[in-house]
Image (cartoon, rainbow, N blue to C red):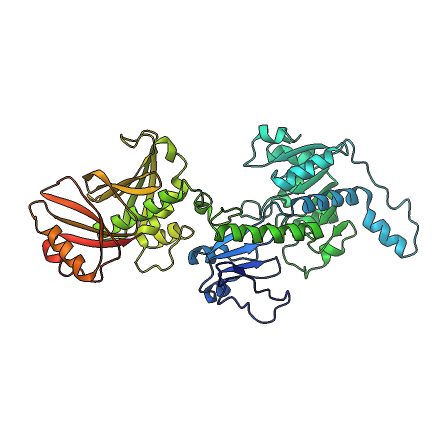
Length: 508
């Protein structure tokens, strides 16, 4: 996806089957479905790439770590296929209970085996739902209509929340022996890999039925096959596998296994919905309207709100000021937010400060997506604190303070209206806060040196640059800081350097 000549978006669709590498060198955005692999090599070749959109929920096919390191935002559509996946799960449960696929296959072979396919009613049976997010709760409410008792587990959803949709939450150890059916709806994480294994199958009710329409690997396939052969597991319905397509056919060919080729999102409605949603999410991001579905850029989720943009600009600026005055981008940095308006601002202000600290260094393309990762690799430790009370006159708006621990270097600022302003550098305060916008010249000089400002104005006159604002700080150890707003940056500061202790420029 490229920027059009009119500032709009231009699509470059590529075929589903791709024997050749993805052609992404000139793309700003990339939208993929599950079959397309966005590897580290693909990301390295995409110099302009800013966002990868996955039309669906899982991002197993995207190297999220490599994308994060490059500063590329990864987005998905977590709600787009929820209903389709939930409905397939419910269908799987029904098929397990009545052996519908096996009976249908028998009929096609010319048989009439009524006695062989004796099933069970779902009414009164207990369904264990592991993972109570969007899909898990949709499955639970639908199966309740069949008279099933629904119990479940989720480390994030509270028991009070799950009770509102009819699921009693229990510890896993209490779930295993109580279930007639177990369905999993978790992401594939180290903590969920092999969630159903030899040990947990042994704790289950004999003949338990298992459904996995989430991710291959949540159910240990070797353990599942052993449980099926021993009768500990009475049947399994699988839409996903550790390896897709599965090369080991023992599980697929087991008579008590129902399986599909990963059809959870394979409905016309889900495909259309996911495609439209990811396209709109990218358009909204590109036009600054908002951000949704972020996988690796949670710091960006609030960055598009009008009230947070100037704070992010301020945080970047303070990080850059701290690096310039501290002459380093290593060590331990403290980020402190003060005031109730900034109570939940840590998630986006801390990466922004880190991005400012790293800007102009060895790291390239530092963004809110990769700032904390790159800071860690650069040897910069970032600690954060918050206090609900900000000193006046910033009590109602909030105050952001940054400092390099073990040094006297620190800076503080706030936002007035929609303008970020500087309050303090290294203990020197500004009675009239200095705006941090556009081209900024910052210098420190002896308070007794009266020729610095005239020399600066003379230099500006020579090069045709206008002085737009000037703010000076209180005196500390006989020196003052000056913040000068310019119409354009200066290309040469050599005439000014003999008159000042230090000087640097910012472009905000």
